[in-house]
Image (cartoon, rainbow, N blue to C red):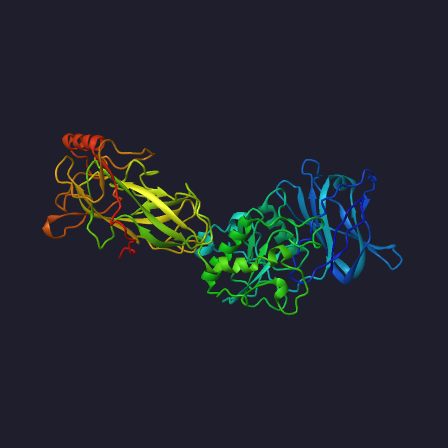
Length: 566
Protein backbone atom coordinates (compact mmCIF):
# COMPACT_ATOMS: atom_id res chain seq x y z
CA UNK A 1 0.00 0.00 0.00
CA UNK A 2 1.25 3.47 -0.79
CA UNK A 3 0.75 6.74 1.02
CA UNK A 4 -0.39 9.33 -1.54
CA UNK A 5 0.90 12.88 -1.24
CA UNK A 6 -0.68 15.59 -3.35
CA UNK A 7 1.78 18.27 -4.37
CA UNK A 8 -0.68 20.39 -6.32
CA UNK A 9 1.40 22.44 -8.79
CA UNK A 10 4.38 20.12 -8.45
CA UNK A 11 4.71 16.48 -9.38
CA UNK A 12 3.90 14.25 -6.42
CA UNK A 13 6.84 12.80 -4.50
CA UNK A 14 7.68 9.14 -4.90
CA UNK A 15 4.99 7.07 -3.17
CA UNK A 16 5.97 5.43 0.11
CA UNK A 17 5.28 1.85 1.20
CA UNK A 18 2.96 1.69 4.21
CA UNK A 19 2.93 -1.64 5.99
CA UNK A 20 0.58 -2.53 8.83
CA UNK A 21 1.38 -0.46 11.88
CA UNK A 22 3.79 1.81 9.98
CA UNK A 23 1.87 4.92 10.91
CA UNK A 24 -1.70 5.47 9.82
CA UNK A 25 -1.46 9.20 9.18
CA UNK A 26 -0.01 10.19 5.81
CA UNK A 27 2.86 12.66 5.90
CA UNK A 28 1.89 16.27 5.27
CA UNK A 29 2.35 17.88 1.91
CA UNK A 30 2.73 21.50 3.01
CA UNK A 31 2.74 22.87 -0.52
CA UNK A 32 0.75 25.82 -1.92
CA UNK A 33 -2.14 25.38 -4.30
CA UNK A 34 -1.72 26.48 -7.92
CA UNK A 35 -2.83 29.99 -8.79
CA UNK A 36 -5.69 28.82 -10.96
CA UNK A 37 -8.52 26.76 -9.47
CA UNK A 38 -11.48 25.99 -11.69
CA UNK A 39 -14.93 27.02 -10.44
CA UNK A 40 -15.80 23.32 -10.80
CA UNK A 41 -13.09 22.41 -8.32
CA UNK A 42 -9.59 21.02 -8.40
CA UNK A 43 -8.38 17.58 -9.47
CA UNK A 44 -5.04 16.37 -8.19
CA UNK A 45 -2.59 14.15 -10.05
CA UNK A 46 -3.45 10.53 -10.70
CA UNK A 47 -1.70 8.07 -8.38
CA UNK A 48 -1.19 4.34 -8.64
CA UNK A 49 -0.96 2.23 -5.46
CA UNK A 50 1.10 -0.95 -5.35
CA UNK A 51 -1.72 -2.93 -3.72
CA UNK A 52 -5.48 -2.63 -4.15
CA UNK A 53 -7.27 -0.61 -1.49
CA UNK A 54 -10.87 -0.96 -0.39
CA UNK A 55 -11.19 2.25 1.61
CA UNK A 56 -10.17 5.86 0.97
CA UNK A 57 -9.00 8.28 3.63
CA UNK A 58 -8.24 12.00 3.36
CA UNK A 59 -6.62 14.27 5.94
CA UNK A 60 -6.94 17.99 5.24
CA UNK A 61 -5.30 20.96 6.89
CA UNK A 62 -7.11 24.18 6.00
CA UNK A 63 -6.73 27.85 6.75
CA UNK A 64 -9.38 28.01 9.45
CA UNK A 65 -10.27 31.61 8.61
CA UNK A 66 -10.93 30.76 4.95
CA UNK A 67 -12.25 27.20 5.32
CA UNK A 68 -15.82 26.59 4.14
CA UNK A 69 -18.31 25.22 6.65
CA UNK A 70 -18.57 22.02 4.63
CA UNK A 71 -16.06 20.19 2.46
CA UNK A 72 -17.07 18.56 -0.80
CA UNK A 73 -14.49 15.98 -1.77
CA UNK A 74 -14.39 12.76 -3.76
CA UNK A 75 -12.07 10.01 -4.91
CA UNK A 76 -12.07 9.55 -8.68
CA UNK A 77 -11.40 5.89 -9.54
CA UNK A 78 -9.57 5.48 -12.85
CA UNK A 79 -9.68 2.74 -15.44
CA UNK A 80 -6.74 1.24 -17.27
CA UNK A 81 -6.80 4.10 -19.79
CA UNK A 82 -6.85 6.88 -17.17
CA UNK A 83 -10.52 7.61 -17.56
CA UNK A 84 -12.83 8.10 -14.58
CA UNK A 85 -14.72 4.90 -13.88
CA UNK A 86 -16.42 5.99 -10.64
CA UNK A 87 -16.76 9.01 -8.38
CA UNK A 88 -16.81 8.12 -4.64
CA UNK A 89 -17.88 10.97 -2.32
CA UNK A 90 -15.89 11.29 0.92
CA UNK A 91 -17.81 11.81 4.17
CA UNK A 92 -16.62 13.94 7.09
CA UNK A 93 -15.43 11.71 9.93
CA UNK A 94 -13.82 14.34 12.23
CA UNK A 95 -12.76 17.95 12.31
CA UNK A 96 -10.78 20.02 14.79
CA UNK A 97 -12.47 22.56 17.02
CA UNK A 98 -11.48 25.46 14.76
CA UNK A 99 -12.55 23.56 11.64
CA UNK A 100 -9.09 23.77 10.15
CA UNK A 101 -8.23 20.06 10.20
CA UNK A 102 -10.60 17.45 8.83
CA UNK A 103 -10.69 13.69 8.25
CA UNK A 104 -12.89 12.35 5.45
CA UNK A 105 -13.37 8.66 4.59
CA UNK A 106 -15.33 6.42 2.23
CA UNK A 107 -15.58 2.70 1.43
CA UNK A 108 -14.84 1.85 -2.20
CA UNK A 109 -17.16 -0.25 -4.36
CA UNK A 110 -14.32 -2.69 -4.95
CA UNK A 111 -10.52 -3.00 -4.78
CA UNK A 112 -8.76 -0.19 -6.63
CA UNK A 113 -5.19 0.86 -7.35
CA UNK A 114 -5.53 3.96 -9.57
CA UNK A 115 -7.23 7.12 -8.32
CA UNK A 116 -7.17 10.90 -8.06
CA UNK A 117 -8.60 13.37 -5.55
CA UNK A 118 -11.20 16.03 -6.32
CA UNK A 119 -11.95 19.01 -4.04
CA UNK A 120 -14.51 21.76 -4.36
CA UNK A 121 -13.10 25.18 -5.22
CA UNK A 122 -13.65 26.76 -1.79
CA UNK A 123 -11.96 23.87 0.03
CA UNK A 124 -9.08 23.74 -2.47
CA UNK A 125 -8.43 27.46 -2.00
CA UNK A 126 -8.14 27.02 1.77
CA UNK A 127 -5.86 23.95 1.77
CA UNK A 128 -2.45 24.35 3.42
CA UNK A 129 -1.54 20.64 3.51
CA UNK A 130 -3.14 17.28 2.87
CA UNK A 131 -2.56 13.57 2.51
CA UNK A 132 -4.74 10.79 1.17
CA UNK A 133 -4.50 7.08 0.50
CA UNK A 134 -6.29 3.95 -0.60
CA UNK A 135 -5.83 1.19 1.91
CA UNK A 136 -7.18 -2.07 3.26
CA UNK A 137 -8.67 -1.73 6.77
CA UNK A 138 -6.54 -3.13 9.55
CA UNK A 139 -8.90 -6.00 10.25
CA UNK A 140 -8.93 -5.61 14.02
CA UNK A 141 -11.99 -6.91 15.86
CA UNK A 142 -14.30 -3.93 16.28
CA UNK A 143 -17.30 -3.73 18.58
CA UNK A 144 -19.81 -1.04 19.53
CA UNK A 145 -18.40 2.12 21.12
CA UNK A 146 -17.66 1.67 24.81
CA UNK A 147 -20.36 3.61 26.65
CA UNK A 148 -18.40 3.71 29.93
CA UNK A 149 -16.06 6.67 30.53
CA UNK A 150 -12.37 5.78 30.23
CA UNK A 151 -10.90 4.62 33.52
CA UNK A 152 -8.53 7.12 35.15
CA UNK A 153 -4.88 6.78 34.28
CA UNK A 154 -2.97 5.67 37.34
CA UNK A 155 0.39 4.42 38.53
CA UNK A 156 3.67 5.89 37.42
CA UNK A 157 2.28 7.00 34.07
CA UNK A 158 0.00 9.42 35.87
CA UNK A 159 2.85 10.48 38.16
CA UNK A 160 5.03 11.63 35.23
CA UNK A 161 2.23 13.67 33.69
CA UNK A 162 0.94 11.51 30.83
CA UNK A 163 -2.15 13.28 29.44
CA UNK A 164 -5.09 10.86 29.85
CA UNK A 165 -7.74 10.15 27.23
CA UNK A 166 -10.37 11.91 29.30
CA UNK A 167 -8.39 15.15 29.05
CA UNK A 168 -7.52 15.24 25.35
CA UNK A 169 -11.05 14.39 24.21
CA UNK A 170 -10.73 10.81 22.95
CA UNK A 171 -13.75 9.31 21.28
CA UNK A 172 -15.08 6.05 22.72
CA UNK A 173 -12.99 3.00 21.89
CA UNK A 174 -14.44 0.12 19.88
CA UNK A 175 -11.71 -2.36 20.89
CA UNK A 176 -12.76 -5.81 22.10
CA UNK A 177 -9.49 -7.78 22.45
CA UNK A 178 -8.25 -7.40 25.99
CA UNK A 179 -4.66 -7.63 27.23
CA UNK A 180 -3.75 -8.68 30.76
CA UNK A 181 0.05 -8.57 30.79
CA UNK A 182 2.97 -7.18 28.83
CA UNK A 183 6.53 -8.41 28.36
CA UNK A 184 7.93 -6.10 25.68
CA UNK A 185 7.64 -2.70 24.00
CA UNK A 186 7.78 -1.52 20.38
CA UNK A 187 8.92 1.99 19.40
CA UNK A 188 7.33 3.71 16.37
CA UNK A 189 6.82 7.03 14.65
CA UNK A 190 3.49 7.98 13.11
CA UNK A 191 5.20 9.13 9.88
CA UNK A 192 2.65 11.94 9.91
CA UNK A 193 2.03 15.42 11.22
CA UNK A 194 3.52 16.30 14.62
CA UNK A 195 0.74 18.84 15.22
CA UNK A 196 -2.75 19.50 13.92
CA UNK A 197 -4.50 22.83 14.22
CA UNK A 198 -1.25 24.09 15.72
CA UNK A 199 -1.29 21.74 18.72
CA UNK A 200 0.02 18.31 19.66
CA UNK A 201 -3.40 17.53 21.15
CA UNK A 202 -4.91 18.14 17.71
CA UNK A 203 -2.45 15.64 16.22
CA UNK A 204 -3.51 13.02 18.78
CA UNK A 205 -7.18 13.63 17.99
CA UNK A 206 -6.54 13.49 14.25
CA UNK A 207 -4.52 10.30 14.65
CA UNK A 208 -7.37 8.57 16.45
CA UNK A 209 -9.99 9.75 13.97
CA UNK A 210 -7.94 8.83 10.90
CA UNK A 211 -7.01 5.45 12.40
CA UNK A 212 -10.60 4.53 13.20
CA UNK A 213 -12.10 6.08 10.06
CA UNK A 214 -9.70 5.29 7.26
CA UNK A 215 -7.57 2.61 8.85
CA UNK A 216 -10.33 0.42 10.27
CA UNK A 217 -8.65 0.31 13.66
CA UNK A 218 -10.69 0.02 16.87
CA UNK A 219 -8.72 2.98 18.31
CA UNK A 220 -5.30 4.61 18.06
CA UNK A 221 -2.96 1.71 17.25
CA UNK A 222 -0.42 2.81 19.90
CA UNK A 223 -0.78 2.73 23.69
CA UNK A 224 1.43 5.73 24.44
CA UNK A 225 2.56 8.76 22.44
CA UNK A 226 5.43 11.27 22.58
CA UNK A 227 4.82 14.79 21.28
CA UNK A 228 7.38 16.85 19.39
CA UNK A 229 7.42 19.20 22.41
CA UNK A 230 8.19 16.33 24.81
CA UNK A 231 4.60 16.03 26.02
CA UNK A 232 3.30 12.53 26.81
CA UNK A 233 -0.12 11.15 25.87
CA UNK A 234 -2.27 8.11 26.58
CA UNK A 235 -3.34 6.45 23.34
CA UNK A 236 -5.10 3.12 23.35
CA UNK A 237 -5.79 2.01 26.91
CA UNK A 238 -3.39 -0.66 28.16
CA UNK A 239 -6.31 -2.97 28.89
CA UNK A 240 -6.65 -3.48 25.10
CA UNK A 241 -4.22 -5.28 22.80
CA UNK A 242 -2.34 -2.89 20.51
CA UNK A 243 -2.57 -2.67 16.73
CA UNK A 244 0.86 -1.28 15.97
CA UNK A 245 3.15 -4.17 14.90
CA UNK A 246 1.79 -6.87 12.59
CA UNK A 247 1.98 -10.36 14.12
CA UNK A 248 3.69 -8.95 17.23
CA UNK A 249 0.95 -7.15 19.14
CA UNK A 250 0.34 -9.70 21.91
CA UNK A 251 1.96 -8.53 25.15
CA UNK A 252 3.59 -5.62 23.31
CA UNK A 253 3.21 -2.00 24.47
CA UNK A 254 3.16 0.34 21.47
CA UNK A 255 4.99 3.65 22.00
CA UNK A 256 5.02 6.12 19.11
CA UNK A 257 6.59 9.50 18.40
CA UNK A 258 4.16 11.90 16.72
CA UNK A 259 5.81 13.09 13.53
CA UNK A 260 8.05 11.82 10.73
CA UNK A 261 11.70 11.01 11.51
CA UNK A 262 13.16 9.25 8.46
CA UNK A 263 14.83 10.88 5.46
CA UNK A 264 13.05 9.70 2.33
CA UNK A 265 9.83 8.84 4.16
CA UNK A 266 8.81 12.45 4.77
CA UNK A 267 7.65 14.94 2.11
CA UNK A 268 10.33 17.39 3.22
CA UNK A 269 13.05 17.18 5.86
CA UNK A 270 12.30 14.95 8.86
CA UNK A 271 10.99 16.54 12.02
CA UNK A 272 13.69 17.48 14.57
CA UNK A 273 14.48 15.04 17.38
CA UNK A 274 15.27 17.09 20.48
CA UNK A 275 16.99 15.92 23.64
CA UNK A 276 13.82 16.94 25.49
CA UNK A 277 11.81 14.45 23.41
CA UNK A 278 14.28 11.64 24.12
CA UNK A 279 14.34 12.45 27.84
CA UNK A 280 10.54 12.43 27.99
CA UNK A 281 10.35 9.22 26.00
CA UNK A 282 12.87 7.60 28.35
CA UNK A 283 10.73 8.58 31.35
CA UNK A 284 7.68 7.16 29.56
CA UNK A 285 9.36 3.83 28.81
CA UNK A 286 10.62 3.63 32.39
CA UNK A 287 7.20 4.35 33.91
CA UNK A 288 5.44 1.87 31.63
CA UNK A 289 8.06 -0.81 32.26
CA UNK A 290 7.82 -0.41 36.03
CA UNK A 291 4.02 -0.33 36.00
CA UNK A 292 3.67 -3.38 33.76
CA UNK A 293 6.68 -5.40 34.94
CA UNK A 294 8.62 -5.25 31.66
CA UNK A 295 12.36 -5.90 31.89
CA UNK A 296 14.03 -3.40 29.54
CA UNK A 297 16.73 -5.02 27.37
CA UNK A 298 17.85 -4.86 23.75
CA UNK A 299 15.60 -7.84 23.02
CA UNK A 300 12.46 -6.60 24.81
CA UNK A 301 12.41 -2.96 23.67
CA UNK A 302 12.69 -2.86 19.88
CA UNK A 303 12.06 -0.49 17.04
CA UNK A 304 9.24 -1.55 14.73
CA UNK A 305 11.72 -2.43 11.98
CA UNK A 306 13.50 -4.91 14.29
CA UNK A 307 10.49 -7.20 14.62
CA UNK A 308 10.60 -10.35 12.48
CA UNK A 309 8.69 -10.02 9.23
CA UNK A 310 8.59 -6.22 9.38
CA UNK A 311 9.29 -4.32 6.17
CA UNK A 312 9.41 -0.70 7.27
CA UNK A 313 11.72 2.18 8.15
CA UNK A 314 9.71 2.81 11.34
CA UNK A 315 10.53 4.39 13.80
CA UNK A 316 12.68 6.38 11.39
CA UNK A 317 16.46 6.47 11.37
CA UNK A 318 16.62 9.52 13.63
CA UNK A 319 14.69 7.73 16.38
CA UNK A 320 16.14 4.28 15.71
CA UNK A 321 19.73 5.42 16.29
CA UNK A 322 18.74 6.65 19.76
CA UNK A 323 17.12 3.43 20.93
CA UNK A 324 20.19 2.49 23.04
CA UNK A 325 19.86 5.82 24.86
CA UNK A 326 16.13 5.24 25.37
CA UNK A 327 16.82 1.82 26.90
CA UNK A 328 19.45 3.32 29.22
CA UNK A 329 17.04 6.01 30.33
CA UNK A 330 14.32 3.43 30.88
CA UNK A 331 16.65 1.52 33.22
CA UNK A 332 18.00 4.57 35.07
CA UNK A 333 16.12 7.01 37.25
CA UNK A 334 16.65 10.52 35.84
CA UNK A 335 17.45 11.95 39.28
CA UNK A 336 19.79 9.74 41.30
CA UNK A 337 22.56 10.75 43.70
CA UNK A 338 25.32 8.90 45.53
CA UNK A 339 26.93 10.20 48.73
CA UNK A 340 30.60 11.16 48.46
CA UNK A 341 31.51 13.23 51.55
CA UNK A 342 30.35 15.89 53.99
CA UNK A 343 32.24 18.49 56.01
CA UNK A 344 29.62 18.44 58.76
CA UNK A 345 29.89 15.86 61.57
CA UNK A 346 28.17 12.53 60.94
CA UNK A 347 25.97 10.59 63.33
CA UNK A 348 29.02 8.79 64.72
CA UNK A 349 30.68 12.09 65.66
CA UNK A 350 30.07 14.63 68.40
CA UNK A 351 27.29 17.06 67.50
CA UNK A 352 27.94 20.44 65.99
CA UNK A 353 27.34 22.97 68.79
CA UNK A 354 26.08 26.46 68.01
CA UNK A 355 24.52 29.11 70.17
CA UNK A 356 21.22 30.65 69.20
CA UNK A 357 22.23 33.53 66.96
CA UNK A 358 25.46 31.92 65.75
CA UNK A 359 25.92 30.41 62.30
CA UNK A 360 28.26 27.93 60.68
CA UNK A 361 28.64 26.69 57.12
CA UNK A 362 29.61 23.38 55.60
CA UNK A 363 28.91 21.22 52.59
CA UNK A 364 27.74 17.89 51.20
CA UNK A 365 29.36 16.36 48.11
CA UNK A 366 27.21 14.07 45.98
CA UNK A 367 27.72 12.34 42.63
CA UNK A 368 25.12 12.61 39.87
CA UNK A 369 24.32 9.01 38.90
CA UNK A 370 21.12 9.84 37.00
CA UNK A 371 20.58 10.86 33.40
CA UNK A 372 19.82 14.57 33.79
CA UNK A 373 22.03 17.59 34.49
CA UNK A 374 21.68 19.19 37.95
CA UNK A 375 21.34 22.95 37.71
CA UNK A 376 21.65 25.84 40.20
CA UNK A 377 18.19 27.07 41.09
CA UNK A 378 16.58 23.76 40.08
CA UNK A 379 18.36 21.05 42.10
CA UNK A 380 18.10 21.62 45.85
CA UNK A 381 19.14 20.15 49.17
CA UNK A 382 16.07 20.50 51.40
CA UNK A 383 15.42 20.00 55.12
CA UNK A 384 13.04 17.31 56.30
CA UNK A 385 10.13 16.96 56.81
CA UNK A 386 9.50 17.98 53.22
CA UNK A 387 8.50 21.56 52.50
CA UNK A 388 8.55 22.48 56.19
CA UNK A 389 10.72 25.30 57.50
CA UNK A 390 13.64 24.28 59.69
CA UNK A 391 14.51 26.01 63.00
CA UNK A 392 18.17 25.69 61.92
CA UNK A 393 17.71 27.63 58.67
CA UNK A 394 20.37 30.25 57.98
CA UNK A 395 19.78 33.55 56.16
CA UNK A 396 21.87 32.16 53.28
CA UNK A 397 19.26 29.50 52.47
CA UNK A 398 17.41 30.05 49.18
CA UNK A 399 14.16 29.74 51.18
CA UNK A 400 13.10 28.43 54.59
CA UNK A 401 12.38 25.04 52.98
CA UNK A 402 15.43 24.83 50.68
CA UNK A 403 18.84 24.69 52.35
CA UNK A 404 21.12 24.95 49.31
CA UNK A 405 21.25 24.56 45.56
CA UNK A 406 24.00 22.88 43.60
CA UNK A 407 27.07 25.10 43.27
CA UNK A 408 27.42 24.60 39.48
CA UNK A 409 25.79 22.63 36.63
CA UNK A 410 26.59 18.98 37.20
CA UNK A 411 26.39 16.45 34.37
CA UNK A 412 25.78 12.71 34.94
CA UNK A 413 28.90 11.15 36.44
CA UNK A 414 30.17 14.42 37.92
CA UNK A 415 30.32 15.42 41.58
CA UNK A 416 28.38 18.36 42.97
CA UNK A 417 28.90 20.43 46.11
CA UNK A 418 25.97 21.78 48.12
CA UNK A 419 27.18 24.50 50.50
CA UNK A 420 24.82 25.59 53.27
CA UNK A 421 24.75 27.46 56.54
CA UNK A 422 23.17 26.45 59.85
CA UNK A 423 21.86 28.97 62.36
CA UNK A 424 19.78 27.67 65.29
CA UNK A 425 16.79 29.59 66.54
CA UNK A 426 16.08 26.95 69.23
CA UNK A 427 18.08 25.19 71.95
CA UNK A 428 18.59 21.47 72.46
CA UNK A 429 19.88 18.39 70.69
CA UNK A 430 18.63 17.47 67.24
CA UNK A 431 19.48 15.45 64.16
CA UNK A 432 19.09 17.54 61.02
CA UNK A 433 18.20 15.45 58.00
CA UNK A 434 18.12 16.48 54.35
CA UNK A 435 16.72 15.18 51.08
CA UNK A 436 17.28 16.12 47.44
CA UNK A 437 14.60 17.60 45.20
CA UNK A 438 14.46 18.53 41.54
CA UNK A 439 12.11 21.47 41.78
CA UNK A 440 8.76 20.93 40.08
CA UNK A 441 9.65 17.37 39.00
CA UNK A 442 10.46 14.94 41.81
CA UNK A 443 12.14 14.26 45.12
CA UNK A 444 15.12 12.00 44.54
CA UNK A 445 13.62 9.46 46.95
CA UNK A 446 10.43 9.08 44.86
CA UNK A 447 10.04 6.89 41.77
CA UNK A 448 9.81 6.63 38.91
CA UNK A 449 11.91 9.75 38.26
CA UNK A 450 13.81 9.59 41.52
CA UNK A 451 16.35 6.86 42.20
CA UNK A 452 17.65 7.84 45.62
CA UNK A 453 19.11 8.44 48.05
CA UNK A 454 16.19 7.95 50.38
CA UNK A 455 14.96 10.75 52.57
CA UNK A 456 16.95 11.13 55.80
CA UNK A 457 20.13 9.71 54.23
CA UNK A 458 22.04 12.95 54.80
CA UNK A 459 22.18 13.76 58.51
CA UNK A 460 23.97 16.16 60.86
CA UNK A 461 23.88 15.89 64.68
CA UNK A 462 23.53 19.36 66.20
CA UNK A 463 23.14 21.01 69.61
CA UNK A 464 21.61 24.42 70.07
CA UNK A 465 23.08 26.31 73.06
CA UNK A 466 21.55 29.30 74.85
CA UNK A 467 22.38 32.68 73.35
CA UNK A 468 25.20 34.70 74.90
CA UNK A 469 28.91 34.17 75.67
CA UNK A 470 30.88 31.60 77.63
CA UNK A 471 32.08 28.10 76.93
CA UNK A 472 32.46 27.82 73.18
CA UNK A 473 32.74 24.08 72.60
CA UNK A 474 31.62 23.80 68.97
CA UNK A 475 34.12 22.70 66.28
CA UNK A 476 35.48 25.13 63.72
CA UNK A 477 37.46 28.36 63.81
CA UNK A 478 36.17 31.50 65.42
CA UNK A 479 36.10 34.44 63.08
CA UNK A 480 35.22 36.90 65.78
CA UNK A 481 31.94 38.50 66.69
CA UNK A 482 29.80 39.99 63.97
CA UNK A 483 26.54 39.57 62.12
CA UNK A 484 25.75 36.40 60.18
CA UNK A 485 27.41 36.43 56.79
CA UNK A 486 25.40 36.15 53.60
CA UNK A 487 21.86 37.08 52.81
CA UNK A 488 19.02 35.44 50.94
CA UNK A 489 15.28 35.03 50.76
CA UNK A 490 13.51 33.23 53.55
CA UNK A 491 16.12 33.26 56.31
CA UNK A 492 15.94 30.78 59.14
CA UNK A 493 13.41 30.98 61.95
CA UNK A 494 13.65 33.82 64.44
CA UNK A 495 12.53 31.82 67.47
CA UNK A 496 9.18 33.57 67.48
CA UNK A 497 7.64 31.46 64.72
CA UNK A 498 9.68 28.30 65.13
CA UNK A 499 9.32 27.80 68.86
CA UNK A 500 11.26 28.58 72.02
CA UNK A 501 14.17 26.92 73.75
CA UNK A 502 14.44 23.32 74.82
CA UNK A 503 12.30 22.24 77.70
CA UNK A 504 10.00 19.50 78.79
CA UNK A 505 9.14 17.20 75.88
CA UNK A 506 5.47 17.46 76.64
CA UNK A 507 5.51 21.25 76.18
CA UNK A 508 8.07 21.83 73.41
CA UNK A 509 6.46 21.52 69.95
CA UNK A 510 9.78 20.31 68.50
CA UNK A 511 10.20 17.52 71.04
CA UNK A 512 10.55 14.08 69.49
CA UNK A 513 11.90 12.07 72.42
CA UNK A 514 13.71 12.76 75.65
CA UNK A 515 17.09 11.04 75.86
CA UNK A 516 18.88 10.54 79.19
CA UNK A 517 19.87 13.69 80.99
CA UNK A 518 16.67 15.53 80.19
CA UNK A 519 17.89 16.69 76.76
CA UNK A 520 15.30 17.17 74.05
CA UNK A 521 15.67 15.74 70.54
CA UNK A 522 14.45 18.36 68.10
CA UNK A 523 12.80 17.51 64.81
CA UNK A 524 13.66 20.16 62.19
CA UNK A 525 10.92 21.37 59.95
CA UNK A 526 8.22 22.11 62.54
CA UNK A 527 7.42 25.50 61.09
CA UNK A 528 5.02 26.92 63.66
CA UNK A 529 4.64 26.45 67.39
CA UNK A 530 1.19 26.57 69.00
CA UNK A 531 2.06 29.89 70.65
CA UNK A 532 4.76 32.54 70.47
CA UNK A 533 7.47 32.79 73.16
CA UNK A 534 7.45 35.71 75.51
CA UNK A 535 8.81 39.12 74.43
CA UNK A 536 11.97 38.73 76.51
CA UNK A 537 12.97 35.49 74.80
CA UNK A 538 12.20 36.89 71.34
CA UNK A 539 14.33 39.96 72.07
CA UNK A 540 17.20 37.82 73.29
CA UNK A 541 17.07 35.73 70.11
CA UNK A 542 17.13 38.88 67.98
CA UNK A 543 20.15 40.28 69.82
CA UNK A 544 21.94 36.97 69.44
CA UNK A 545 21.15 36.85 65.74
CA UNK A 546 22.59 40.32 65.17
CA UNK A 547 25.72 40.00 67.32
CA UNK A 548 26.43 36.26 67.42
CA UNK A 549 29.48 34.45 66.23
CA UNK A 550 30.02 33.22 62.69
CA UNK A 551 32.13 30.16 61.96
CA UNK A 552 32.74 27.72 59.12
CA UNK A 553 32.61 24.03 59.93
CA UNK A 554 35.42 21.77 58.77
CA UNK A 555 34.84 18.69 60.89
CA UNK A 556 36.86 16.58 61.32
CA UNK A 557 39.90 18.08 59.69
CA UNK A 558 41.79 16.33 56.90
CA UNK A 559 39.41 13.41 56.71
CA UNK A 560 36.84 12.22 54.16
CA UNK A 561 33.81 11.17 56.11
CA UNK A 562 31.89 7.95 55.64
CA UNK A 563 28.18 8.11 54.80
CA UNK A 564 25.96 8.84 57.79
CA UNK A 565 24.27 5.89 59.39
CA UNK A 566 20.50 5.79 59.54
